[in-house]
Length: 231
Ligand SMILES: NC(=O)c1ccc[n+]([C@@H]2O[C@H](COP(=O)([O-])OP(=O)(O)OC[C@H]3O[C@@H](n4cnc5c(N)ncnc54)[C@H](OP(=O)(O)O)[C@@H]3O)[C@@H](O)[C@H]2O)c1
Image (cartoon, rainbow, N blue to C red; front, top):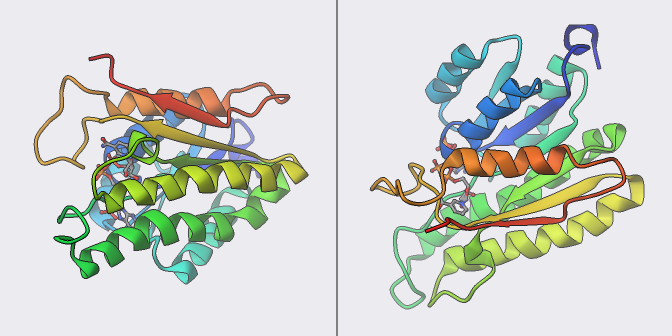
């Protein structure tokens, strides 16, 4: 770790950091003593969050996760800024505006799969070389929608991909002492939905799961976390 961050717990890069689960996790990690790199498409929201968290602890990088070259540039810039990357929270994702297969729209699927499937793959491929140097941790936001059958849900299928991908990646990373955790949340109260979901999980509940996985003892890897709302 470079001198500027010698007092920090580690450096975690978060995709989808401009809102909801990613934003809450960034805040929690900074409170826990980590430095964070924030990746999303909306620059204004990232800059606002950096202002809140402090420039010494947070670094913004504007990128679309469906663009592999942009992610390569992002991880190079983050490594240059902080000297190392200890963890990546691959959390960016989006839903579909149309539901079902017959009524679904191909363009809508392309955008969603670009983020939820390709974006996850690209985030892993672009960050593994730097994570290997720190024997780092890769954390994925799948969903309960990736654990149950949902009528005609292409979104759910993208989260089944995330779930299976995470388990497979954990096997690949363990060869060099890296860890991979897949988090499957039920409904979370975030801007993902148009209406508030106050009775459901809060984004801070998922931030808790991320911290739990990161703080596991060196001899253990939390492979998956399944979090449902109490009600
Ligand atoms: N809310 C739930 O009930 C729930 C449950 C289970 C799993 N999840 C998953 O949790 C993750 C976070 O969702 P959330 O609930 O926190 O929703 P959110 O508030 O809508 O946040 C989504 C985040 O992903 C980013 N994003 C979307 N497409 C992107 C792209 N192509 N490139 C880069 N960033 C992109 C958004 O930022 P920009 O628009 O600025 O790029 C935003 O920061 C998603 O993977 C979602 O599928 C959510």
